[in-house]
Length: 116
Image (cartoon, rainbow, N blue to C red; front, side, top):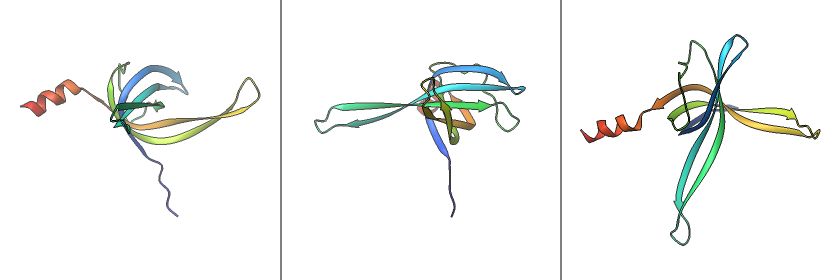
């Protein structure tokens, strides 16, 4: 049986921090995606979903220097689960996106290109 674990996201960076770990840089950031629809009363509804993302610096993926809150990005990666024991002794599971490629999108430039 074939299985696939691939995620493609386009959204807005909420926070971003770079750490040094295992001799390499690690970028941890949050990404917000929005889904809009009309409810039964034709009222617009926007639902925001937040993703925890991490990207290890490597030769295969260009490290996005200066990534900051508000940047629009497109990324691909895979979902991963992390289990940890909380202070209360309960085991928790957290899901995060292990990013394999990321591109910062300058929306203003894309709009200008489409207008010409």
